Amino acid sequence: MSSAFSAILSNAVAGMTPLLLAAMGGLFTELAGSLNIALEGLMLMGAFSGIVAAHLSASPALGVLTGLAATALVAWVYGKITIGLKANIFITGLAVNIFAAGLTAVLSQQFFKTKSVLAFSLAEPARPFAQLAALPFVGPILFGHTWFVYLAWILAFAGWVILFKSTYGMRLRATGSNPKALIILGKNPETYAAQSIVISGLYCALAGMSLSFPLSAFVPNISAGRGWVALVAIYLGAKKPAAIAAACFVFALAESYSNFAQGSLKIPSEFILAIPYIVTLLALISGALARRLADRK
Image 1 (cartoon, rainbow, N blue to C red):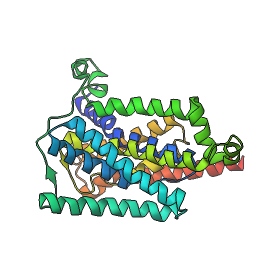
Image 2 (cartoon, rainbow, N blue to C red; image 1 turned 180 degrees about the vertical axis):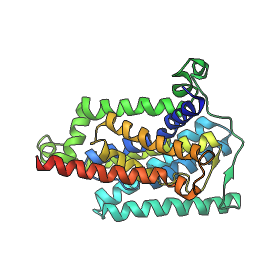
Image 3 (cartoon, one colour; image 1 turned 120 degrees about the horizontal axis):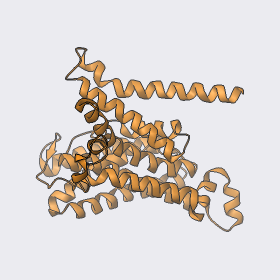
Image 4 (spheres, helix red, strand yellow; image 1 turned 90 degrees about the vertical axis):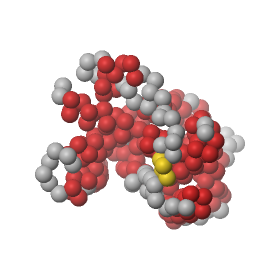
Protein backbone atom coordinates (compact mmCIF):
# COMPACT_ATOMS: atom_id res chain seq x y z
CA MET A 1 0.00 0.00 0.00
CA SER A 2 1.55 3.32 -1.11
CA SER A 3 2.24 5.94 1.52
CA ALA A 4 0.02 8.46 -0.30
CA PHE A 5 -2.95 6.07 -0.43
CA SER A 6 -2.42 5.13 3.21
CA ALA A 7 -2.28 8.81 4.19
CA ILE A 8 -5.52 9.55 2.33
CA LEU A 9 -7.32 6.70 4.10
CA SER A 10 -5.86 7.69 7.47
CA ASN A 11 -7.00 11.28 7.03
CA ALA A 12 -10.43 10.03 5.98
CA VAL A 13 -10.76 7.96 9.15
CA ALA A 14 -9.92 11.05 11.21
CA GLY A 15 -12.03 13.34 9.03
CA MET A 16 -15.18 11.28 9.41
CA THR A 17 -15.16 11.86 13.19
CA PRO A 18 -17.09 15.17 13.31
CA LEU A 19 -19.43 13.93 10.57
CA LEU A 20 -20.20 10.69 12.40
CA LEU A 21 -20.79 12.41 15.75
CA ALA A 22 -23.03 15.08 14.25
CA ALA A 23 -24.93 12.54 12.15
CA MET A 24 -25.57 10.29 15.15
CA GLY A 25 -26.83 13.31 17.07
CA GLY A 26 -29.10 14.21 14.19
CA LEU A 27 -30.33 10.61 14.04
CA PHE A 28 -31.75 10.89 17.55
CA THR A 29 -33.90 13.89 16.61
CA GLU A 30 -34.78 12.42 13.23
CA LEU A 31 -36.15 9.22 14.76
CA ALA A 32 -37.98 11.33 17.34
CA GLY A 33 -39.83 13.05 14.54
CA SER A 34 -37.95 16.29 13.91
CA LEU A 35 -35.25 17.25 11.44
CA ASN A 36 -32.48 19.03 13.33
CA ILE A 37 -30.96 21.53 10.93
CA ALA A 38 -29.17 23.25 13.81
CA LEU A 39 -26.34 20.69 13.76
CA GLU A 40 -23.97 23.23 12.23
CA GLY A 41 -24.59 25.82 14.92
CA LEU A 42 -24.38 23.30 17.73
CA MET A 43 -21.02 22.13 16.41
CA LEU A 44 -19.76 25.71 16.40
CA MET A 45 -20.90 26.20 19.99
CA GLY A 46 -19.09 23.07 21.12
CA ALA A 47 -15.92 23.91 19.22
CA PHE A 48 -15.75 27.46 20.60
CA SER A 49 -16.88 27.00 24.20
CA GLY A 50 -14.79 23.86 24.66
CA ILE A 51 -11.49 25.23 23.40
CA VAL A 52 -11.91 28.59 25.15
CA ALA A 53 -12.77 26.93 28.46
CA ALA A 54 -9.80 24.58 28.08
CA HIS A 55 -7.55 27.60 27.53
CA LEU A 56 -8.92 29.65 30.43
CA SER A 57 -8.86 26.75 32.88
CA ALA A 58 -5.65 25.16 31.55
CA SER A 59 -7.58 21.88 31.68
CA PRO A 60 -8.65 20.09 28.47
CA ALA A 61 -10.97 17.86 30.53
CA LEU A 62 -12.76 20.89 31.99
CA GLY A 63 -12.89 22.36 28.52
CA VAL A 64 -14.66 19.28 27.18
CA LEU A 65 -17.17 19.34 30.05
CA THR A 66 -17.81 23.05 29.49
CA GLY A 67 -18.29 22.51 25.78
CA LEU A 68 -20.80 19.75 26.46
CA ALA A 69 -22.68 21.86 29.02
CA ALA A 70 -22.79 25.02 26.89
CA THR A 71 -23.97 23.21 23.78
CA ALA A 72 -26.52 21.19 25.75
CA LEU A 73 -27.90 24.47 27.12
CA VAL A 74 -28.30 25.91 23.62
CA ALA A 75 -29.93 22.65 22.49
CA TRP A 76 -32.27 22.72 25.50
CA VAL A 77 -33.38 26.28 24.67
CA TYR A 78 -33.79 25.25 21.04
CA GLY A 79 -35.97 22.34 22.17
CA LYS A 80 -38.06 24.56 24.44
CA ILE A 81 -38.74 26.95 21.59
CA THR A 82 -39.57 24.30 19.01
CA ILE A 83 -41.25 21.64 21.15
CA GLY A 84 -42.67 23.73 23.99
CA LEU A 85 -43.63 26.90 22.13
CA LYS A 86 -44.36 25.12 18.81
CA ALA A 87 -42.10 27.43 16.81
CA ASN A 88 -41.23 26.41 13.28
CA ILE A 89 -38.32 24.00 13.66
CA PHE A 90 -36.72 24.94 10.33
CA ILE A 91 -36.70 28.68 11.02
CA THR A 92 -35.55 28.12 14.60
CA GLY A 93 -32.80 25.76 13.46
CA LEU A 94 -31.51 28.34 10.99
CA ALA A 95 -31.66 30.92 13.77
CA VAL A 96 -29.47 28.69 15.95
CA ASN A 97 -26.92 28.39 13.15
CA ILE A 98 -26.82 32.16 12.64
CA PHE A 99 -26.80 32.79 16.39
CA ALA A 100 -23.83 30.46 16.94
CA ALA A 101 -21.79 32.04 14.16
CA GLY A 102 -22.56 35.53 15.43
CA LEU A 103 -22.06 34.77 19.11
CA THR A 104 -18.66 33.16 18.60
CA ALA A 105 -17.54 36.20 16.57
CA VAL A 106 -18.80 38.67 19.19
CA LEU A 107 -17.21 36.78 22.09
CA SER A 108 -13.93 36.47 20.18
CA GLN A 109 -13.87 40.22 19.64
CA GLN A 110 -14.94 41.00 23.20
CA PHE A 111 -12.47 38.78 25.05
CA PHE A 112 -9.64 38.20 22.57
CA LYS A 113 -9.87 41.36 20.43
CA THR A 114 -10.11 39.46 17.17
CA LYS A 115 -12.74 37.87 14.97
CA SER A 116 -10.09 35.81 13.23
CA VAL A 117 -8.33 32.63 14.33
CA LEU A 118 -7.98 32.07 18.07
CA ALA A 119 -4.77 30.12 18.66
CA PHE A 120 -4.05 28.63 22.09
CA SER A 121 -1.20 26.68 23.63
CA LEU A 122 -2.88 23.46 24.66
CA ALA A 123 -1.51 19.97 24.90
CA GLU A 124 -2.38 17.86 21.88
CA PRO A 125 -5.21 15.38 22.56
CA ALA A 126 -3.96 11.95 23.58
CA ARG A 127 -3.43 9.26 20.95
CA PRO A 128 -4.28 6.09 22.86
CA PHE A 129 -3.17 3.54 20.25
CA ALA A 130 -0.21 5.38 18.74
CA GLN A 131 2.12 2.41 19.25
CA LEU A 132 -0.07 0.27 16.96
CA ALA A 133 0.41 2.68 14.05
CA ALA A 134 3.58 0.77 13.18
CA LEU A 135 1.57 -2.30 12.19
CA PRO A 136 1.69 -3.02 8.45
CA PHE A 137 -1.23 -1.97 6.23
CA VAL A 138 -3.93 -1.21 8.81
CA GLY A 139 -1.66 0.40 11.41
CA PRO A 140 -1.22 3.83 9.78
CA ILE A 141 -4.90 3.91 8.82
CA LEU A 142 -6.70 2.82 11.98
CA PHE A 143 -4.28 3.80 14.72
CA GLY A 144 -2.38 6.88 15.81
CA HIS A 145 -5.48 9.06 15.88
CA THR A 146 -6.66 11.24 18.76
CA TRP A 147 -9.09 9.86 21.32
CA PHE A 148 -11.91 11.79 19.61
CA VAL A 149 -11.78 9.31 16.72
CA TYR A 150 -12.21 6.24 18.89
CA LEU A 151 -14.79 7.96 21.08
CA ALA A 152 -16.84 8.68 17.97
CA TRP A 153 -16.91 4.97 17.11
CA ILE A 154 -17.85 4.08 20.68
CA LEU A 155 -20.63 6.66 20.78
CA ALA A 156 -21.93 5.58 17.38
CA PHE A 157 -22.23 2.02 18.69
CA ALA A 158 -23.75 3.29 21.94
CA GLY A 159 -26.26 5.30 19.93
CA TRP A 160 -27.26 2.18 18.00
CA VAL A 161 -27.74 0.25 21.25
CA ILE A 162 -29.80 3.02 22.82
CA LEU A 163 -31.98 3.63 19.78
CA PHE A 164 -32.60 0.08 18.61
CA LYS A 165 -31.91 -2.20 21.57
CA SER A 166 -33.37 -0.38 24.57
CA THR A 167 -36.81 0.47 25.89
CA TYR A 168 -35.90 4.14 25.93
CA GLY A 169 -34.91 3.99 22.27
CA MET A 170 -38.13 2.22 21.35
CA ARG A 171 -40.13 4.97 23.03
CA LEU A 172 -38.03 7.68 21.42
CA ARG A 173 -38.60 6.16 17.99
CA ALA A 174 -42.31 5.89 18.77
CA THR A 175 -42.29 9.64 19.32
CA GLY A 176 -41.64 10.06 15.63
CA SER A 177 -43.62 7.13 14.27
CA ASN A 178 -46.53 6.54 16.66
CA PRO A 179 -46.83 9.16 19.42
CA LYS A 180 -50.34 7.96 20.37
CA ALA A 181 -48.83 4.69 21.57
CA LEU A 182 -46.72 6.63 24.05
CA ILE A 183 -49.72 8.59 25.25
CA ILE A 184 -51.55 5.33 25.90
CA LEU A 185 -48.57 4.23 28.03
CA GLY A 186 -48.83 7.46 29.99
CA LYS A 187 -45.69 8.94 28.45
CA ASN A 188 -45.34 12.41 27.00
CA PRO A 189 -43.97 12.36 23.43
CA GLU A 190 -42.83 15.96 23.76
CA THR A 191 -40.51 14.98 26.60
CA TYR A 192 -38.74 12.42 24.42
CA ALA A 193 -38.58 14.86 21.50
CA ALA A 194 -36.98 17.51 23.72
CA GLN A 195 -34.53 15.00 25.16
CA SER A 196 -33.51 13.92 21.66
CA ILE A 197 -32.51 17.52 20.86
CA VAL A 198 -30.34 17.75 23.99
CA ILE A 199 -28.71 14.41 23.14
CA SER A 200 -28.11 15.73 19.65
CA GLY A 201 -26.46 18.78 21.18
CA LEU A 202 -24.07 16.60 23.21
CA TYR A 203 -23.02 14.66 20.12
CA CYS A 204 -22.55 17.89 18.17
CA ALA A 205 -20.50 19.43 20.98
CA LEU A 206 -18.02 16.57 20.72
CA ALA A 207 -18.09 16.88 16.93
CA GLY A 208 -17.10 20.54 17.19
CA MET A 209 -14.42 19.89 19.79
CA SER A 210 -12.96 17.11 17.63
CA LEU A 211 -12.18 19.92 15.16
CA SER A 212 -10.87 22.62 17.50
CA PHE A 213 -8.93 20.59 20.08
CA PRO A 214 -6.48 18.87 17.67
CA LEU A 215 -5.76 22.30 16.16
CA SER A 216 -5.51 23.94 19.58
CA ALA A 217 -7.41 26.76 17.93
CA PHE A 218 -10.83 28.03 16.97
CA VAL A 219 -11.27 29.06 13.36
CA PRO A 220 -14.37 31.04 12.36
CA ASN A 221 -16.83 28.69 10.65
CA ILE A 222 -14.65 25.75 11.68
CA SER A 223 -17.54 23.34 11.05
CA ALA A 224 -17.42 24.36 7.35
CA GLY A 225 -20.76 22.83 6.40
CA ARG A 226 -20.17 19.51 8.12
CA GLY A 227 -23.49 19.79 9.93
CA TRP A 228 -25.30 19.86 6.61
CA VAL A 229 -23.23 16.97 5.26
CA ALA A 230 -24.13 15.02 8.41
CA LEU A 231 -27.82 15.52 7.58
CA VAL A 232 -27.20 14.11 4.11
CA ALA A 233 -25.44 11.11 5.66
CA ILE A 234 -28.49 10.37 7.81
CA TYR A 235 -30.70 10.03 4.75
CA LEU A 236 -28.15 8.25 2.59
CA GLY A 237 -27.66 5.81 5.45
CA ALA A 238 -31.42 5.20 5.59
CA LYS A 239 -31.33 6.20 9.28
CA LYS A 240 -29.22 3.14 10.14
CA PRO A 241 -26.03 3.80 12.16
CA ALA A 242 -23.77 1.41 10.21
CA ALA A 243 -24.85 2.82 6.86
CA ILE A 244 -24.59 6.37 8.22
CA ALA A 245 -21.00 5.64 9.28
CA ALA A 246 -20.25 4.35 5.77
CA ALA A 247 -21.70 7.51 4.23
CA CYS A 248 -19.62 9.67 6.59
CA PHE A 249 -16.49 7.78 5.56
CA VAL A 250 -17.23 8.35 1.86
CA PHE A 251 -17.63 12.09 2.43
CA ALA A 252 -14.48 12.21 4.56
CA LEU A 253 -12.60 10.26 1.88
CA ALA A 254 -13.64 12.84 -0.70
CA GLU A 255 -12.40 15.63 1.56
CA SER A 256 -9.15 13.80 2.26
CA TYR A 257 -8.55 13.26 -1.43
CA SER A 258 -9.25 16.92 -2.19
CA ASN A 259 -6.62 17.95 0.36
CA PHE A 260 -4.12 15.54 -1.22
CA ALA A 261 -4.99 16.66 -4.75
CA GLN A 262 -4.20 20.31 -4.03
CA GLY A 263 -0.52 19.49 -4.01
CA SER A 264 -0.44 16.87 -6.74
CA LEU A 265 -2.97 17.75 -9.46
CA LYS A 266 -2.62 20.68 -11.82
CA ILE A 267 -6.23 21.77 -11.82
CA PRO A 268 -7.80 24.91 -10.30
CA SER A 269 -7.77 24.80 -6.50
CA GLU A 270 -11.37 26.06 -6.41
CA PHE A 271 -12.50 22.89 -8.16
CA ILE A 272 -10.41 20.68 -5.89
CA LEU A 273 -11.85 22.28 -2.76
CA ALA A 274 -15.34 21.72 -4.16
CA ILE A 275 -14.83 17.94 -4.51
CA PRO A 276 -16.40 17.01 -1.12
CA TYR A 277 -19.47 19.11 -1.87
CA ILE A 278 -19.76 17.71 -5.39
CA VAL A 279 -19.67 14.21 -3.91
CA THR A 280 -22.36 15.24 -1.42
CA LEU A 281 -24.56 16.61 -4.21
CA LEU A 282 -24.09 13.50 -6.35
CA ALA A 283 -24.87 11.32 -3.34
CA LEU A 284 -28.11 13.24 -2.74
CA ILE A 285 -29.14 12.84 -6.38
CA SER A 286 -28.25 9.14 -6.38
CA GLY A 287 -30.17 8.56 -3.17
CA ALA A 288 -33.24 10.33 -4.52
CA LEU A 289 -33.13 8.32 -7.74
CA ALA A 290 -32.68 5.06 -5.83
CA ARG A 291 -35.72 5.82 -3.64
CA ARG A 292 -37.81 6.71 -6.67
CA LEU A 293 -36.90 3.46 -8.39
CA ALA A 294 -37.67 1.53 -5.19
CA ASP A 295 -41.11 3.19 -4.93
CA ARG A 296 -41.95 2.17 -8.49
CA LYS A 297 -41.33 -1.51 -7.80
